[in-house]
Every structure is written in structure tokens, then in C-alpha cells.
Image (tube, rainbow, N blue to C red; front, side, top):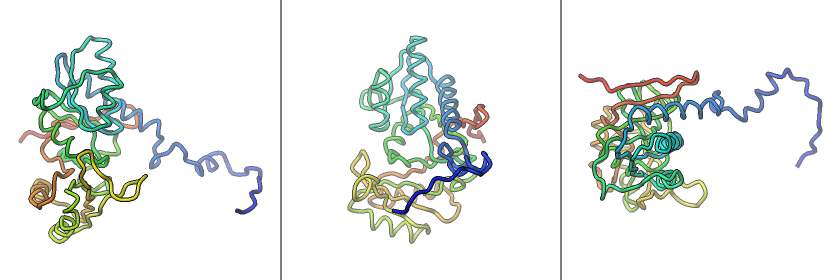
Length: 266
């Protein structure tokens, strides 16, 4: 360890602080990012949740603010809603906010599901599963009359892969991960990488006991066709491609506004 010598700071203040971007995320302040997430989540809950609704609760950091707003409305307006979680995280959010919870066995048809996304393109085709919950998220989204996406502007893209570079998460049965990996790479190109855990040795294990391959694609695709092609590979449980499922997305912008994107009706 070398000797540390203190010297007076001679840099201009702007240059000095630029060396320590402790509250910067890709050049955007963390406070603004969180405010953008909150604005999008609150707007979605206000626009799409009504009394007696059955609400699917997604996973991820933006959903925290949706549950926060839902709990506020329950307290202030006396709304009667029941919530269906998509993951252990969302279940804990529902419990900690003292919201009524049920499951798809008891309540198989939902009014709305509100969830985040890792990326959404101009047609609201989504990549989800950065947190490893894509299977349960897709099941709950498919059970709802409407699927509403909430995110900050960093997730808003024209084409998939423009901003999200970690690939499409694909949940696979553990014994099949290597054959699935080889099949995807030979048929679709790119690279399918077994996701490794951060705080333990070995791969990530989903809530369903499966592994995740992150397919880093190398060119644009027909996502509906690709999704079906991957799903036909034995051992694949589900993909993180959500095609033709979302009806509207709310993107929180850095200036405090919320941008809406609706599915085009042809």
C-alpha cells in the first residue's frame, strides 16, 4: 500500500466534482432517475386501477413506486383491490404495504397487470427478465385484461438492443442449458451466456428452480418469430421477449413529465 499525501485541491469546482460522480448513472443523477420512475408508476396506477380491481404486481425497482401509490389510494380513497405477485420481491412489497393478496388459482382473471421492463421498442415489444422473474411475470401479464408498462426514459428504445445490451433472458431447465445454448447460437447467432450469481458460486437459480441464459443477439430480428422458435427448443421454459402483450407504456422523463406510448391499432 503506497503512502497517501494530501494536497490542496487546485481544480475548478466543476472539474473536481466530475471526478466523483457518486450520484450519477450514465450521466443522469440518481435522484432524477428515481423521480422519473415514481412519476411513471404513479401515473399508471392513477390511470388504470379502479375500485374492486384485481391487480397483477410486477417486479423491479419501478414497481416499488407503483405499490407505494396503490397503497396510498387504498388508504385515502378506500379502494378495494386484491393483488397477485409475480415474484418473491413483489409478494414482499404487497405484504409490507398491507395490501390484500391472492393468487392465480383463486383469481385466474385479472383487470390489469403493472410491471417494469428492461427495454421497450417503438411497438412495445419488451425485453424483461433482468431480475430473473420473466416466467411468472409473463403468466401474470397474460392473465390480465390490460398489461401496463412503467419505466424511466432509459428503457425507451426504437429497436430492441439499442439501450439494453445484456441480451434476452431465457429460462431453461438446468439439465438442458448447454444443448439449448448451442441450439440458439447455431440457429440465431449471437451468444447465449449462462447467468452467474453475484453472491454465490454457480449460476443464478430462478424462483422456479431453473437457470437463465442471456442471449446477446447480434442483429435485429422478427421478434414474434424468434420467440416462437426459441420456445420450440426442448428444455426452454420461457423467454424474456414480451411480444404483443403490452397495451400502453409510461416512461418517466428527466424533466418530470411522463411520456405515454400506446400500441398502434391497425
